[in-house]
Amino acid sequence: MSAGRARRLPPAAALACAALLALAAAGCRSEAPAPQAQRQAGAEQGPERGDTIVVGSIGDASNLLPALASDSSSFEIIGLVYGGLVRYDKDLKIEGELASSWEISPDGLRITFANGEIVHLRPSGNAPELRCYAEADNQERAAALATECLARVGALPD
Image 1: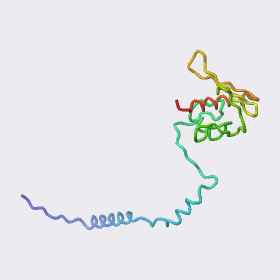
Image 2 (image 1 turned 45 degrees about the vertical axis):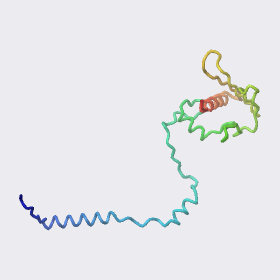
Image 3 (image 1 turned 120 degrees about the horizontal axis):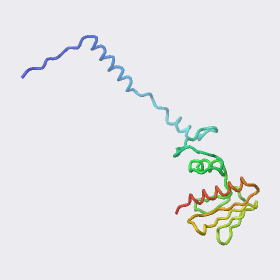
Image 4 (image 1 turned 90 degrees about the horizontal axis):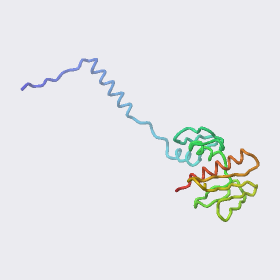
């Protein structure tokens, strides 16, 4: 069995080790945290006008025109930008968003709004699909109504 010998470091290596230990110790020291009162005051003020909101999405929107949009990412943003005639409340009952009043047919498939716009849903007679017809003052508005209606129907649980 051999006995171990202590080995001395050269002075330059010992100085380098001491400097590294001093730097490591200085790096571990944390700055004093902001006082609790300052953090709470910032939280109580709420967001400032012009603040930024960041939302995760499964993809980029391909189109922000309701009549031309066909993907869920586009409809997610369209729903934040455009208002619909009606919306669902927390109990999934229809309430007015932009429409002041409307009338629903007894079969529940036709909605006539106070401004004269009409949305009519009809099941297809020969395919497992739902058709949507819309009447409005112009073609773009009718297409937007039909697109929004089908998007909302597609978002309902099965």
